[in-house]
Image (cartoon, rainbow, N blue to C red; front, side):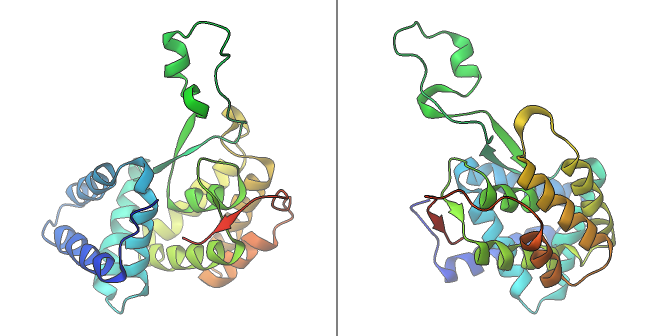
Length: 226
């Protein structure tokens, strides 16, 4: 992402988001507002959305935190999280240059080195971004830990989000279909789910994810900060 917003721009955008949510008492409409923001940002800028959530999580505005967390609670009840797309962990490749291109090549997302992409909620996105080969440069362990802790602290402001999100992650951790998650990622998601269900502090939950018995980051990876 080349056009990284400044801290002031992020704060202003976070304020506008909270004001938009606060203007509508209907939880379903608030979810629509949140999803509309994600769509307007586009797939490649989902990390900006995560940073906006982080700005609110780090603020002293408990009302704003509850608004956002409760909107995620609504999304979890509907199984409709505002998500971002990351390529699946299968190796990306160019199509065979000696053969003809057909519509299925484009539909599968495997043209120009792409691979099928999965829509992921904030916690899953951070975990996959840290652990798996995607279209993004992987997150460092420290950035993953701090970002995950902030996200969980924010979501804990809603009883529904605090209860339903770890349940979702536990189910995701058992899903070996479609290549969405590697074994290492599933182990981390399971660790997050278990620690979250047990009521541990956000920092302890994030540390549990790092301490899980998962494979090390493959050698040669370049890591970046969020």
